[in-house]
Image (cartoon, rainbow, N blue to C red; front, side, top):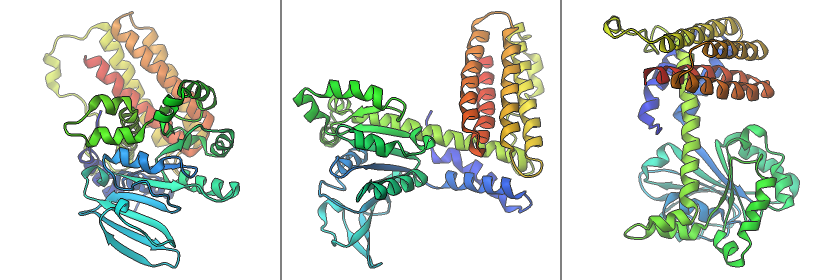
Length: 399
């Protein structure tokens, strides 16, 4: 899967039109506005950690060239799209200064608090990188980390060893942000030379397994070199750890975009039927000329129809007045998926029914996690999961 901004634009337009009608209840209108904002703004990738942990090198590696350099800084750095290389600096006194070029070649004022690097790279139109150092005492670091969690979509925590004081600091991050976070062991080449990388990773399997999506040893300088070499050096890029990190970060971004897209389509389907393109339209009558479906395919189609109908009825009831009611929505979602599971279990055993049952079981496990959250976002995620499951089952039945 690879979502391009062109995939988002039609749905964003439909969602904007629906919100502009101005006749929605307050809670759905607020939810829709948040969805529209997420669809239209770039994904924010935060690179953070304690000082001198290789954050700038990781950002340069992900960008594919030297933009930040290796100068120690105590200010926030943002890298975003611009028509030409330019740096806009904000000082503690509120001044805004402009410099041409890249940060690696500049000496900024000591009173800088924010440096925004603009680069003419297409992918930066839809994702921005932010280096956010954690400075000061423990309370200040925790406060900064919570701001990062609130304003970022993906977090890369850079560390050389992820020591106990770092673990304690990271433990304060909300679980919802941890679900979109990566632990990056920087300067992995040095650890390899010391013979300590294997032990470090084994320790991390225990301390970080539930705190991050994954643990990534990275030799950022080698990764950057691999991308700048002519011709490119794919083996060095892979062995540096940069390729795996970049691919997994992009995959996480696309999962988030796909979720936003599904939720927006669901919202438009519920509230904007006049403008919205019909989603999952009934098949054209020409289908009647095809060979008759097998009992498994027919039974699965019936189960899918029940899921679609039940999900739509649930949405109508839950959103009738003041938006989704968390408890009832989660309960109804679980009931729908359990009914679906029972229906599929009754089908004759086949590759199709087995694959469908596995998909439903995975969906049921995800719903159990949503129930643990017990907030409005969890209810939204649960309903979105049902529609994603419906699409997946529909695809299976057509194979």
